Image (cartoon, rainbow, N blue to C red):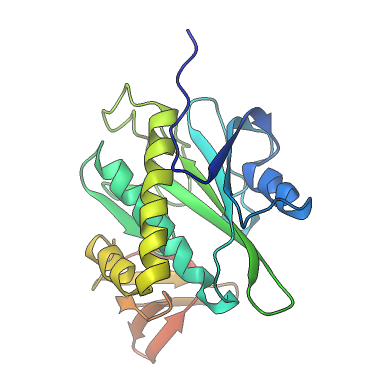
Length: 253
């Protein structure tokens, strides 16, 4: 029996693939080939990936049974606002996964945790137009449903490992796109404030000591919040730092 496809909101076109090098790579190829994002957004969904990538070019292992998808759309915003959308997307994932598991939190910048273990991650890529706005934005999403990697720098888990066997990849995809569509509409109408507050309500490590690894230094301090653009605010012995990109670990190293 053929399994039902996800039901997506209007103006979202689903591209279903058995296998691809990477859903972000395929979405970017579609953008480069002239996809008309003024009329529709595109969701690329693959059952497996042969060359999946996470943040900072890390390999994303892609066994059958997990969710691998990328959302390609016109964000209608400037380059400086793009970072907010990674947080909006992680909030959408947190809300969907919370329907199937307890103690689900967002980890800056755009991971989702169950009981402190990573269940989902996002990879955002953009291209700017000559006018200084974004020509397109790709949000790549991976959710560990049936499988999760072992021996990772940050502990990982899957929905099945957390006792939610029976949930399907299509259900998580449908829930994510629907929730992202609602949050994106709200963000376009009222700005980042509501999503920022909602993200902080479910933030892992807030008001606790964390370690942030940057390309050229490692910082330790207390995670006190997000600035208006979504950057992490870290209070350390050397003063307050605003961090736009980095790897967060809980506690001091």
